Picture 1 (tube, rainbow, N blue to C red):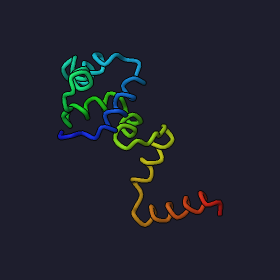
Picture 2 (cartoon, rainbow, N blue to C red):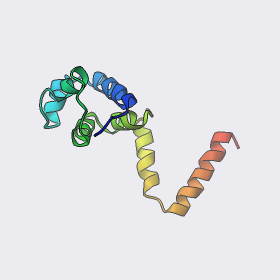
Picture 3 (spheres, helix red, strand yellow):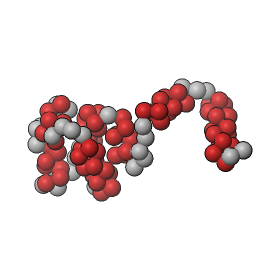
Length: 106
């Protein structure tokens, strides 16, 4: 990965700190070198996309969404996304219109 956005690295560090496991354990669970995370944050190594995705896979979907987008979502949000993504395009449009009206208080 080239010049990974600094904001992503800041959010990754935050997600790692929120996980009860040590960085080394997360690396081991992700089947990457045990000091990989240390190398990224202490030595300034640029994380590869493959290894970043392995780390995010260990941290889970909520942390992944936060790291990649900056949005904090919970289990209800994830379930909603799963439901919406399986709908036909026309139904998605109708659902968006309904939610927009609900948000506006109509």
